[in-house]
Length: 469
Image (cartoon, rainbow, N blue to C red; front, top):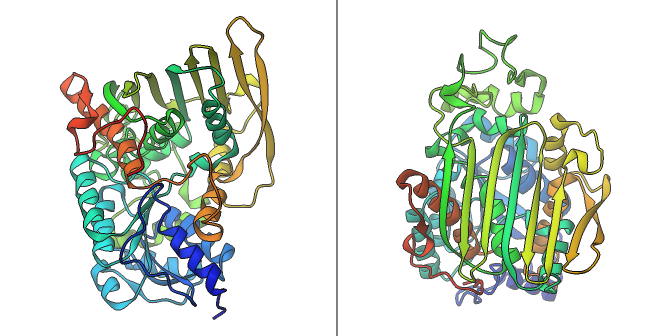
């Protein structure tokens, strides 16, 4: 095994323990001096074995090593080891894995609803924990994670990759410069197209029990961006939502697309057999846990919302209006920040803005690919100053890997963790909690038909100036 310079090694692991922005260095944390960072991964689905698995091995072979993989599905676990090309033991029992291997960092990429179990056990075993978004799916689990982190003297890193893209960072920079004055309100609209949006309703994400609804699983990205951009905590949420397009609203239904009698008439028919990776990872191992990757978008068990709108009041008096559409003909988003001195407008992938004819079916695949940035574009931001002409600011952006955010997040964690970051990209436990609480509050608001205060959900008190611990 190739060793790393002692000073570099110490800097690396010390900085990693501080990635939860603003968090104190754990009292019990002693960085190893002459070895690679030992990782274990729990949850060997597509995101886990690619973004948090194979890519790390390929990009940081001198800095990390996997010492254990875990999943409840033994077939998928076997495939994951082969796909990642690692020589480490595999486990179907997480507790057993932690007792048999010595890890520094637990990476959690399981179904959202069980994130908390593995996060808490990882902390209790003496490891730092890196979790995919969302942190968890409800307030009770979030509080339990918060309590466990306090007891453990270890840190939690939340994988918010969107923050790291150059376009999102430019928005942060302009707001930090107060370019349109004090912000008073925000209009934020996110559009999932009929390819990407429908994919959530094919998977376990389509049930509240699995992902806590797209208010949590998907919108946690968007709420984290809002919290980070505004540098404030959300205070209160009032929301509307309904299930009108997918689920039981469909005129027909099946179990999977493969076995459906309505292939020729269903516009959402998706042939998973054309994707060999998904066939090998999911279809070949359905017998172990009964999970179908190509579930019917109209199946009766779907109970999440497919249209969502919320008004979010921040502790600094900013009002944000947010909506999420899951069956748009195009994929993209747009946002506007209104301030006392003007208005900042931003958007990506709105087809008519640049008269683009984008392949909507390929957009999501391009976003998720981990290839190094080859497809670069120049995207505009518009700054309107009151009583002045507007200004167009051009930002060099990327298509692959969530707008270039994926590789920048990885580099910060595993390659250059001590690098200065004036924009505070790194996200810790409090960031993860505050992002999901907006979605949790939205769910509760719809159910109870009233505003829900964020401070009533956990012991975290919202502040006009965003805190990190």
